Amino acid sequence: MRARILGSSAILAGLAMAGPLAADTTLHILHINDLHSRIQPISGSDSTCSAENDAAGECFGGIARVATAINTLRGELEGAGENVIVLDAGDQFQGSLMYTTYKGDVEAEFMEAIGFDVMAVGNHEFDDGPENLARFTEMVSFPVISGNLDLSQSNVLTDEMVPDHVVLDVNGMQVGIISALAVDTVETSSPGPSVIFQDEIDALQADVDALTEQGVTMIIALTHVGLPQDIRIAEAVTGIDVIVGGHSHTYLSADDPDRAGPYPYWITNPDGVMVPIVQAYAYSKYLGHLEVMFDDEGAVIFAEGNTMLLDASVTPDAEIAARVAELTGPIEEAMAEVVGSTSEAIDGAREVCRAMECTMGNLVADAMLDRVREQGIDVAIQNGGGLRASIDAGEITMGEIFTVLPFQNSLATFQLDGAGIVEALENGLSQVEDGAGRFPQVAGMRYTWDPAAEPGSRVVSVEIETADGFTEIDPEATYGVVTNNYMRGGGDGYATFTQGMNAYDFGPGLEQVVADYIMEAGDYTPYTDGRISTVE
Image 1 (cartoon, helix red, strand yellow):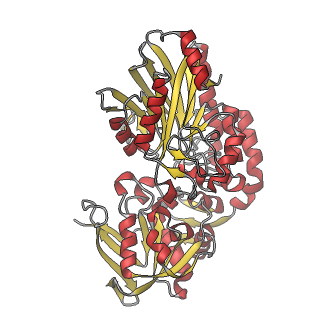
Image 2: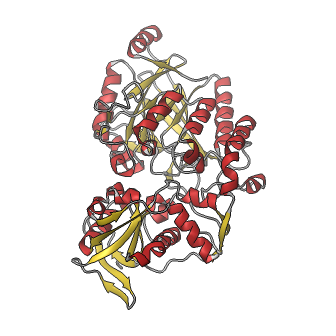
Image 3: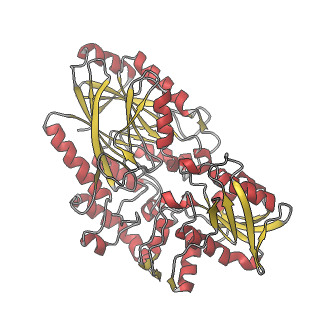
C-alpha cells in the first residue's frame, strides 16, 4: 500500500487529529539508488547479463528481481502491521539500451508497477535536458523531488513537477521527505542554464525548518549527492533523522567484510544527535532495508538493517519479467552481434577508472586515438565516469559495448596548447577523493600525479608519445586532442576544452569507434602499461 501524500493544510489537520506519536513508533525504509536503467539482469561486472547466464543462476538484479524483493518484503511487513515506505535516491536514467531506446518510459512504467513512494532527482535525470525530466514526472504518480533547485527561471520544469519536499501519511504518521542534488550536475549532465542550483546544506536546513514549523518531526533526507557529501550534510544540518543517499554507488553492509562502510553509517550532527546514513550500491544489485524506531518526540532511538543481494535466489516477478522480454525484443538482435573477444575481463569498475589507470580506460582511449591519429591528433583524454561497466572474458557483444558507453557521445577533436592539456589534467585529478567521474584516462601520453598535493597542483609530469619515444610536454606547443563531445563542451569541469582551436564535435559514436577497434583486433588482450602513475 502506497503512503498518502499530504499538503500543508492536511499535515496540520492530521497532526491535530492524531495527537502525539505513540512511543517506539517503527518505520521500515526500503530503498534503491542509481539503477541506471539496469532493467535487465546484470552480470558480476554490472553489465547486461545474457539470458543463458541468467538461466544458469549467474546474474543479479534486474527490475523483475527488484519488484519481487520489494513486494515480498513490503507484504510481509505490512501483514505484520508494520509501517513501510519505498524510496529511490535518483539516477534511474542512463546506463543501458533500455534508456537509450525508450528515454525513461520503461523506468516510469516499472516504478509505477512496483509502487514507489518518493524519488529523488539524480544528475542523470537531466541527461536529455529538463524536457525529458518534465515528461517523466508527468508519467508517474509519486513525487519526484529535489530541494536545492531554483526552477523560477525555467519554462520547462515547475515546482509542482519537482517539489522541494513532500510529507507522507504512513498509517497516520507524518513523514517528511526532503532532498538535494549534487551541485556539479551542471558539469556532469545537461540541466541547462534555467535550472539554478543552490547549496545543498542551506537548502536542506531550510526545508527541515519549514517542515518542523508545520509540526512534522520525522524527517528523512533522500539525497543524490554521494556519501562524502551526505556525511557533511549530517554534520552540518540539524533536524534530519535519516539520510537515504545515492550518487557515489557506495556499497554499505552490516556484515560483508568487503563493504565500503557499515550499514547504517552513523554521523553526529551539530546537536550531538547520531544520524544514520544508508546507501545500496547501484545497478539493481541490492535492496536496502532500514528499520528505524522513533520516540514520541519523533527522534530516532534505534536504527539497523542491511543491504540485500538480489542474486539468483530471488525469483524475478513473472509479469514484469515478461514485459521486460517484450521491451527487449526490438533491440536484442542488434545487441547480440559479436564484435570480437577478450582474453581476460576488461575492468571498467567505477572505483578503479575514477582513480587510476584501468584496462577499460586504455581500451577506449586507445580506440579513440587510433581512429583519428592520421588527422594530426596526438593524445586522447576520456573521463573515467563515462565508462559505466566492465566486460567479462570471452565474446564481446555490441550490447556490452553500449552498456560500457551508454551516453551516445561522439568523437570530438581540436587543437590545444600544452599548458591547456596540463590544465585539463589538473581538473581531472581535482576530485579523486570524491570518486568524481572527471578522472582522465589517456592515450598517446603518460603522466604522473601526486594524490597528496592540493587540487590544482597535482600534476607532476606529462610526456607526449612521439615516433622517437616520450618527450616532455611543451606548454607553448600545439597538440591535437581527441575526446568525447560531452567533455569538449566543458562537461565534467573540462572548461579548457571549450577553448580548443579547429574543433570538430561530430565524429562517429564512441561506442562504434570502440566496436570497430575490437573488430580489427579480433581477440583483444586488456592491459595497463603505466601511462598513469603516482609519485612514490
